[in-house]
Amino acid sequence: MAAASSSTVVAPASTPASFLGKKLRPTQATTAAAVNYYHVKSSSGANRFKVMAAPTPIPLTTIAELRQHHSQLVRLGLASHPSHARRLLSFLARDPDSHFPYAARLLAHHPDPHPALFNPLLSALPPRHAARLLALMLSLPLPPDHFTFPRILPGAAPLLLVAQLHALLVKLGFHSHSQSLNALLAAYLANARPDLASRVFRGGGALDVVSWTTMVGGLCKLGLVDGAREVFDGMPERNLISWNAMMSGYVKAGRFLDALEVFDEMRARGVEGNGFVAATAAVACTGAGALARGREVHRWVARSGIRMDDKLATAMVDMYCKCGCVEEARRVFEALPAKGLTTWNCMIGGLAVHGRGEDAVEVFARMERKGVAPDDVTLVNVLTACAHAGMVREGRRYLDHIVRRYGVELKMEHYGCLVDLYGRAGQLDEAKKVIDDMPMEPDVGVLGALFGACKLHGDVDLGEAIGWRVIELDPQNSGRYVLLANLLATAGRWEDVARVRRLMDERNVSKEAGRSVIEVDGEVCEFQCGSLSHHQAEEVYAMARDMMRRIGAEGYLPDTRDVLHDVA
Image 1: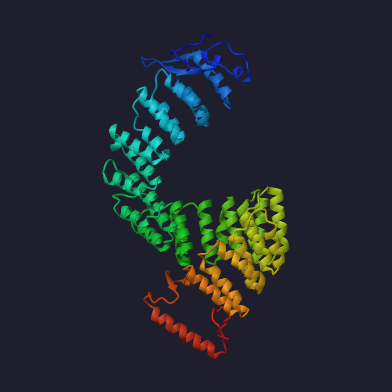
Image 2: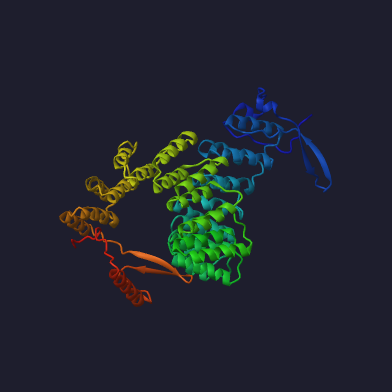
């Protein structure tokens, strides 16, 4: 059957003979070619069928296969067909450093170039090649369309390239196009230039809800949550992405109560939430230690009919575990029909930190029976469970099992857990041996685990040696100095305690004030040692003094072993 050719295609230079349409040696790829039937609409509008001999789409795994396939398309006059051209270009985009010249020649010699051919490739290429492709596009000349800048700008990492694209965008009149404007905002924010993004934003143009949300999310990622809140408050309209972006920004900044205020405002306005908003609210409750608020969020999820998917369930399980309600966490966990690895890990970790080692390893065993393979986080949680429950032998066995069966590679945190496993059990020599045998230099976390174990079990000599190493690795952490001073104080070595305090003064390291958080009638209250900022501070201190007087009358004696002054 004769092949029909709809157009003449000029082959790129420097291509193999197969590209020029010469006879090919049959290969597995070429013998897989068959006749495809393409439905073609005539110019009169009547439907006809035109038979065209075209290669059946075959997997393209190498550049040699692509060249052969391309040469067949050239011979059959189909290389200019958009679907074939896009397929060739999508393969070439996988390795732009090697194949960009071929892709550029293909586009440069296309008989009917159109932005629709260039745009997908622009978004797939790294900035360097995308800029070259845009230059080729302009040289044809082929003007960009309203999809071009949204494709290239998100990946335009270098600030200079973003500025050049900005100038071109304005010159071609696309600054009034919302998608192009939004892509420009995102590019400036990705380059950590909120000033330039704000200048574009304040300059007007076709702003829509995506523009405002892009500014809110981008400023939050840069830690500028107050600026993000200013933009958020000025939004003419908001969608769920906007609300969640503001909440997430506060959560990432550690301003959990502010995040919950945004959540409350959203509900007060009658906005229906979704699983993403609910998960963010649950994380905020976790950070604030607000159990009552967390339960309220949980009830809201049930009332709203929001599906408890894996991500939301994980956030709820984590919230209940960290607020001390392990059984409520288990109820959420057990009610989830399909559990992902993250949810299994969260439940195992929650049980672990509450000392319920046997329950944690039982959940791990169930996870294995369900065919879910553990990862490095699972191993951390299982080792933590065994450490907190004093299950030293079991912990070592699980480590060997997970590493051998699942190929989990031991990382720094795993060695830290192993040191903690031995250290909590008082096996300090074994813990030190783990450190000595590590294939990498131990970090402050690994050494800190042994340091804490020495303090727990009163090994002053080893603890002092490890303590000084920890301080040199983490010289601005006041807790390290305090722990070493406390350890030395237990041995009555007050001169050494004073030396530690002098070193803190020399390095300008001050002990962080203790903080505590308590939830009363749904309100989260935070107290700082020595602070009178709370509106009921006088009543709180009066109650504390009265309690100390009463328990003293009952025979209570304070434990002064960790007091950094000689009060003996």
